Amino acid sequence: MRIMVQRAVIGDINLFFPLFLLTLLFLLYKNFRSSPSKGLPPGPTPWPIIGNIHQMGMESYVSITHLAQTYGSLISLRLGPRLLVVASSPASATEILKTHDTVLSGRIAVDLKANPERMTMVWAPECNDQWRNLRTLYRSESFSAKVIECQEILRENKVMELISFLSAKEGDVVNIGDVMYATVFNILSNLFLSEDLISFEDDGSDERIKQLMKRMMVLVSTPDLGELFPIFKRLDIQRLNKRKRGLFEKISATWKNIIKERRARVVDGGISSEQDFLDFLINRGFTDDYINNIFHELFTAGTDTSGTTIDGTTIEWAMAELMKNIDAMNKVRDELTKEMIGNFVQESDLPRLPYLHACVKETLRLHPPAPFLLAHRAIDTCTVKNYTIPKDSSIFVNAWAIGRDPVAWDDPLTFKPERFLESDVEFKGNHFQFIPFGAGRRICPGIPMPARQIHFILASLIHSFDWSLPEGMHPANLDMTEKFGIMLRKKQPLLLIPKARHSQ
Image: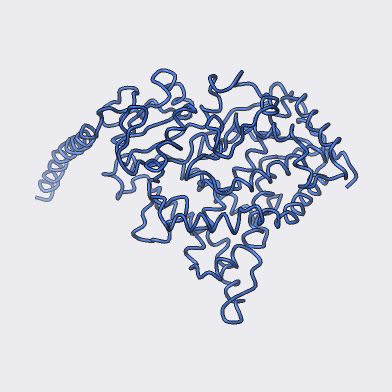
C-alpha cells in the first residue's frame, strides 16, 4: 500500500513539474511580449524570455560599445523582460544627462517599505525634497570648498604616514592598490569618525573590513535573477539579498560602537562640540540607522560620491600608466622639482602642476572609476533623439565608451596627457565627452574631494620615490587588463618597488 502511495505521489510530481515549468515560461514570455517596444532606440533582436543577456559577456561595457558601433550611440536592450537604454556617445549622454535630465534622473529604488531610512541620497527614487536636503547636507558639511580647505592638515598628515610606511618598505615589493585603499579609507574615516579603521599591513584586526567591503562589491555587481525577472524577486533564489543583509550588518559593526560611544558623550542639553561629520549628524537628530546607511553610502564603492575605491583605483591606474609611459613620468617629476619649495608635496603646490593634472585627467578618460554611470530610471515616458523611452526604463551611460570615442578624441586609445594642456575640458559635468563623475542632477556631489586627494597622493608618490617593477618585469609588458565590477579595477594588482628620493 505504501509503495502504491509513493508511486502515486511521484507520478503527480512528474506530471506537475512540466506543467509548472510550461506555465512559468508562458508567464515570462507573456511579460516579455507585452512590454512596450514601439519606437524604441535600435538594438539587436532579443531572444524570447532572456532578451539580450547572452550578448552581454563578462565585460558588458565593452560588448555594449561594440553593439553601439553597429546600432548607434543610443541603443535598447532587453535583460529578461526589463528594458535597458544605453548612451555611448557625448551627444547621447547630453540628451540623457542634460536635455531630459528632469525625466531621466530617477533611480531604481531599493525596497524602502521595511526600512524607509535606507533611502539615502544616491538611491532616492526621484530628486525630491528629501534628496535635495541630503545633497545639500553632503555638500555643505563634507564636500564644500570651505570644508575641503579645513581638512588639508588631516590629508597632509595621512600622506606623511603613507610616505613613512613606504620608506620603511624601500626595496620591497608593494601592492599599490592595497596601500592606496588604506590611505584613502583612513582619510575618509578620520573626516567622518575621527578614527583610523585600516592599517597599511594586514595584521588580522583590519583585514575583516577590507574583505567585507570587497565581498559586498562582488555581491552588488552580481546580476540578480530577481531584478531581471520580478517573478523570482521574493524567492531570492541566489540568496543575494540575504547575503547582502548579512554583510551590511557585519560592516555596520565597524562603526556602530563608535556611534554608541559618541552618543554617550553628549552633554549640555544634548549637544556635543562638533569635531567631525558624525557629531554633526548626531546633533541634527539623525537616528543610528540613518547614520549607518549614510556611512555605507560614503565608504562603499556603490555610490556616486567619493568612495575609497574610486580614489585608490584611479591612483593605481595613474601609476600604472606612468610606469608604462616613462616620458610622462619624467615630465611629472621635473614639474614637481621645478615648482616645489620643500622636500614634500603640499596641497598648496597643486595649482602649479598642470602636467600632473593632465595625467590625472587622461587616466580618468581611459579608466573611469565606473564604466557605466550608476543606472538612471525614466520617471515618465519621454522622447530622446526621436526614440521613445518608456516609463521605468533603466538608463545607462557608458562613460568608458565615451572616453574612447574616436569622434570626440584624437588617437583615443593612447595615453597622451598633452591633449589636456591646451584644453579647458574638465570632469565637472559640463563637457559630455569627459564625464567620469557623471553630470546633471545625479553628478557626484563630492568631486572636490577626489580632485584634491588623487592629485595630492599621486604627486607625493612620484616626488618622494623612484619606482621600479619587480625583477624580470618590463614596463612595456605591464598587464593593463581591466576587471569589471561596479568599479573598473586592474585585474592584476600593480606591484612596485619604492626607493626614497629624499631623506625622511
